[in-house]
Length: 406
Ligand code: GLA
Image (cartoon, rainbow, N blue to C red):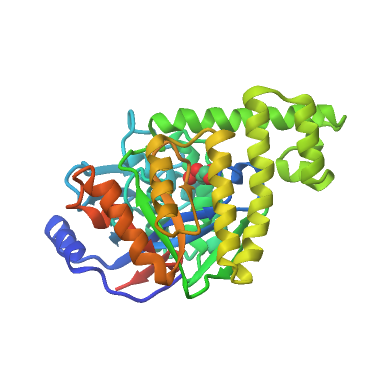
């Protein structure tokens, strides 16, 4: 996980001003856009994300003691410091420093590290936008701690550890975000499978463009969206347990949807669901089973260059997330509609939903039109044109996290 690239000038300057001498290392970890496979990673089913060129960067210098001292280039986040340890007390409320603590505690648990570091952090990943700014921060922090202790963790091991570690903030997330941030390959999306974690890169066709657009509605993983996320996950798990009973299988043999779908086909599962589930539980179940099918077909579509096929599956995913998983909001639906009207072959909410971003797929020749339409009909209409680059951009498939010694 070594990579080239100097510490950006402003980050280096801020570090030197703050700590009196320059940083010795740079850790970086990308955000991600999930192309398809939403709210099924925690069910043990494969997902299909891509790392973004937007990333968290940490300029750091190992310390001689066990303190982690961190500040950011954004003055709205207060600096923090804490001791490296096995049981780190969380900050109260929704403090950003809890993501640092999550990473450090997780790394210490696995590797028994003792040395802390001084750090300055900056990020180009929009916060609470469903683009995994928090997992990028967790992965970059873990690499800073590893680098400070002369450890080079394997990306898969790092991703698995940090998926568990991030539960420290209280969201019962799956492992997608940490996996793609740690293990992406440039120019590629990836099929990510779980238990054990596997990442299979899939080249993104050169004439495909994925456009990302933010609703301007934030969905904080450590805030209100956490409750909505955890509740749906609970319902999804309850539906699986009821299905196991319906099929007269011991719950221990159907510990995940993957177990279930290894025993019965998607079609049989759906028929069983219709027979034994009702209301929200039936809807959550139907989303998981149909989304799994869409992920499998989407990978085939990308490998065979079927733009229209991939787009159609994205549209199906959005419908299912809206009607069955119920995590869309009017702004997400509006952006999806604008993108499709302007020539995108498919568009869907990405990430956990309840705010955040959409991702739209179009041919390279149509990308300017799609960007223009979203700009005019969504951002100009809301008078939010000044910071447009933060909200509307073309995703470039980026490499996974790295740490470099200066
Ligand atoms: C969040 C979680 C992920 C995943 C998505 C929804 O990003 O961290 O593990 O569940 O939501 O697909």
